[in-house]
Image (cartoon, rainbow, N blue to C red):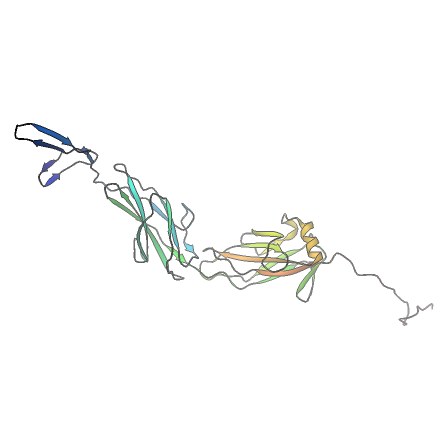
Length: 289
């Protein structure tokens, strides 16, 4: 069970509670015993878990867009003896490094973030997490790293498919219900890559989506309005009254969005007004022979 001397105890066993008893004697050979509350011995470190880079708990991300914050989550840290007292998080430029930000107490959370950092685009950062048990034993685990991409997708052009005319940069259509298809191309991201596109419809200015909120269309390069499930009557009325802005924007894998590319679209619901046709060469009176 261990050996104790005036200098302390040794060869103690993990999982055993040791109680210290002190006996005091007086000159009449009477004594009193006083016992401690006991000390639970835990010489075994916690079991290390797995660390995930990124803001989504339990999902490991390879890219991020934030220039001043690094986030991570973890699972699987356990201690079967004294129990985990706290978790700590650090950030470094190499696996298990702490040169960007040293270990910080984050309580018993399963996710955390460190803010106020100065990060550099294109650099890979690694998060480290360690569990400290009640006895001070430590278990550490490190992530596989996350790379900063703070630049949004760029470039590209937008156009309209189907039958239309253009006047003063405004696209005129006879209907938004048949053959009206928004087309785009050339939007690229050289670092993390384009993850998907969103389209929306708004009034007054490019980028607004008060008519149709921006919605994910995946990696498609076109959007057919007639099959989009929109309330086309409302959009068409607005387009006929004052025009609408139909826009597309791209998101990269790191989560940064591009500027919105827009087309100003107006629906012309009225045909041309009929006139008179005169036979012959005269524009005034019709010919009779």
